[in-house]
Length: 185
Image (tube, rainbow, N blue to C red; front, top):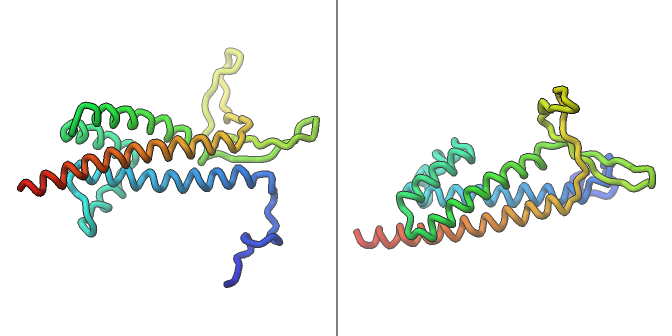
């Protein structure tokens, strides 16, 4: 098997100081991808389009996350198997909003290493979207620049996985309820 250049020691990666952040960001993307599949599965079960080759992906692939969550909340209210289930659903949907914002801050940012006076290397993150900020009573356009530790990214990966576990549990309950209702027909 031929190795791609970036998989070899000899490939000239500009700055190895970013490797820890790159690894964490890669896992953030993997966790988010799986999480979106779980959200789609819950949505499809709530609206009654599940199974293979039924076109459900045509629906979910043309919706953004906020649209999916609004439908999940509405259909969850209509089809709730219990008040506890609904409470857990509303709680995790609220948490997903916070997670999504944090994810966007990490994924859509520019990272670079800096060195302080003590020759300590640290990684900075700059938001890719600039904002109008009030600085000392004056408005200015600027981007947020903050030091970021890979642990912050890993904590978000774990938060995504925790929310994914709850979504999967809610899906399992509603899927079983759908199967039971289909058996009664």
